Amino acid sequence: MSRWQPGARERLHAAAVRLFTEHGYEQTTAAGIAAEAGLTERTFFRYFADKREVLFDGSPALAELIVRGVRDARADLGPLGMAASGVLAAAEFFDDERRAYSRTRQELIDTNPALQERERQKFAELADAIGRELRERGVADLPARLAAESAVVVFTTTFRQWISAGEHRTFDAIATEMLASLKAIVAG
Image (cartoon, rainbow, N blue to C red; front, side):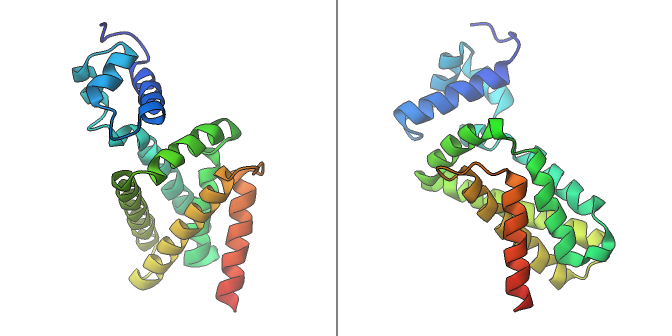
């Protein structure tokens, strides 16, 4: 087993998803993933803290993209508008090539309580990051928290719709629709 071959992270990721899908998340081990990828278990742990993290590998990049969207938003949009800019920025991450994988990934998460808990933790961390960015931009704590939590709800609702069977609209188009719905609800 060569541990220095290029693309190790990608091979480990592909092997993990394949094994999770074929054998189930609980029955798949880090050693099995490494073997399937033609790598050592030690190499697996160089890239991932545990087998859960394979499915959450893109979370830091996505969070940074969303936070940057909040950071770059016009201040006159207000807290919710700035947070919404972060959700819209996520469209860059969710192109059509990622949709099939995202569906498979979500099916794996939805069938495993430990993965569901990890996903909730990632969303809480995302809300915290959005809230921090809003506070750094001068938004008071309570409006920052409300806007950040609302943005995460819009993000998760958008994502679920984007991966739903038969959905072909872009992430951006769905997010725009969800944000308009939220604004209508808030407006009463």
